[in-house]
Image (cartoon, rainbow, N blue to C red; front, top):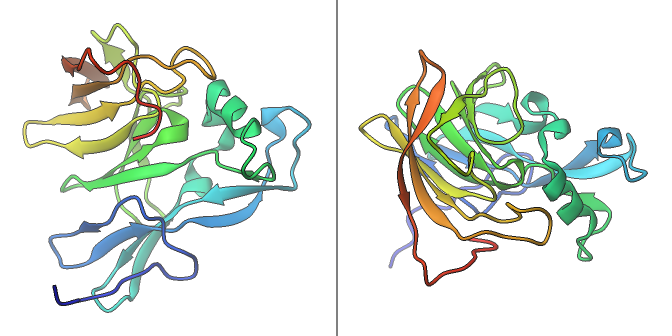
Length: 222
């Protein structure tokens, strides 16, 4: 029960969703910060002077020193937020003037990069490093972009509102697929635990496992 270490992000508040310990002894955490954004592409009267929540992923030494950082907003445009999450955001009575286009919820070290799950993008991204130059290697599910993988053998065509993306030793990725707003804003489907085999040569993600509890009709959040 003895506190060993307290660690937080540099320059902005920390996001509580996840923290990982790297083999080199450093940690990776993400910020939860408000900043100016351009939501003209969302319509609904929004423009370039809006406020958005952004996440900057930071590699930190055990003493809290910043080694490198990867800025979500610099690599992923708000146009990748699906319409159902835009509608959910605009109908949120809690913080009507603060928008949440990404909503990160898990990060995983793969040995040659990182997997990051973004709930409001309905997608998991593989990046090659948590530095400013880190590039997106592939994207699984969500709005298509050049790095998107082709989904194979998944009748539901990907995940929605997912959590807990983890890289397994056999070259597959497991994800808890909440099914949130899968049928449109306000309409959820049954959750499932899925596993995809990623082929970076063929650029595919093939569904190899789909596990469901039929006593659970929906899983809105977690």
